Image (cartoon, rainbow, N blue to C red):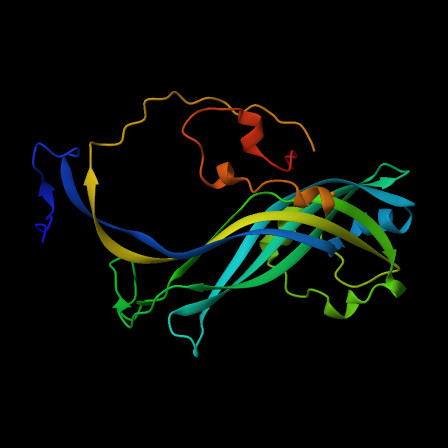
Length: 270
């Protein structure tokens, strides 16, 4: 049986210099998603609703991911597994035709995945907590990485032909509304705006843990910072042919073609 490695300097013949004990987040389970979200309701701002009511059609501009709300719940009948409920908040931009007025609205997409996060009954206390009772349960942490979605289509439908008015979103975080710059219309008017989006994301469950790892030296960057150049633009058939943007989540070691890895939606909302 091989000798146990302990923290500290190691034999000079080894490729690394030292074994170091670190506290970090260990990934227990993860999944990647390529969601094609069709006919998602857009809740327009008050002024945008007036433009929608008077438009012949709308043209899509871009979609921006404003915020992701993540909740983790243990599955009682399957120990060690958890549900991860993810709610995406999007700012949708379009253009009314033929007036050319800009349309801005909010879309909300919710999904649930099941991942393994192991289990443990330890209560974690830290000096960062102000209260004596301020401990956190030993529950895994859910992390969602997502890029701005690709806007696949934008259309207007008659409210009488739309069946989703009974499931209106009522609770929108105040800071989301502030990001839109104006109050939004949550009820169904005469006309409803629908958007189709393509969303790439990675979801994972992590836990605090201690690991013994080899080190070579201190990590000091040897590359100069460079500015990010702008990229150009680029609906569910086309979306299915687009490869998962791995480099968005795990950047390559070399520079490569910068514009091919910065923004797969090809659109930057401001």
